[in-house]
Image (cartoon, rainbow, N blue to C red; front, side):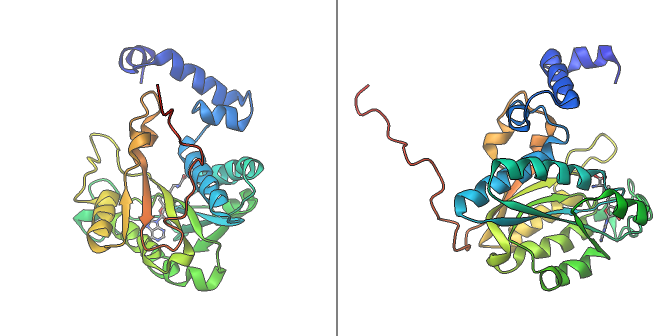
Length: 273
Ligand SMILES: C[S@@+](CC[C@H](N)C(=O)[O-])C[C@H]1O[C@@H](n2cnc3c(N)ncnc32)[C@H](O)[C@@H]1O
């Protein structure tokens, strides 16, 4: 995008440029910049911070954050950085797990995986380099259709609070969402999710009938007690970036802690105005 395009199409170009500068220079504390939306890879910061905030309100000391689709690990490294900052704000330890085949995209299964946009083998990774670059995240290699089935048994993870979905395909996202259908002890009652492939461009034309959006829609049709829902307050937040349209929250109405009070005690309105 040229500078002219940017100035003519961005509704608040100066404000956005300021945020960009703050995020790049990291001037000010993490929480100060988070409030201003001046944090790089804000979507990861958002799901991790909201997950940790909810966990601390619920009295949990440890949570898990997952990324489905790791590739070179750029996203996972940002999750590690943000988790370290967020652990200073809330008394919650964040364990991070990254899922990937290790060999890039599998073959698309049918039109729902958008073969007009994706090809088998895209996003191949350098596994030793990835492993060297990570400080705390654990990698779960294999097709998510299998690794999602053995994850709880193999890792005995803390309840899942935040998930970044970046598997690109309908079929892979559908398989990953199997975890969201399991016993509520493995999940937070409201689980913060980022779905990367839900906006795209004129090429992908993401919609509710293919790709990640179809996986969300099917989950909601299938599950009575759990719904992956839009956080409307965030969508309404004018001036924040487009990532806020890629956030959903999985509500588990059947979770024993779903109804636990976590809001402000003092919500009394003046009796006489
Ligand atoms: C776009 S890349 C992820 C990029 C990464 N999140 C980042 O921030 O750099 C998508 C990844 O999903 C992985 N993937 C897709 N389908 C998968 C499946 N069924 N099982 C495991 N990994 C899968 C691919 O191997 C690929 O590395």
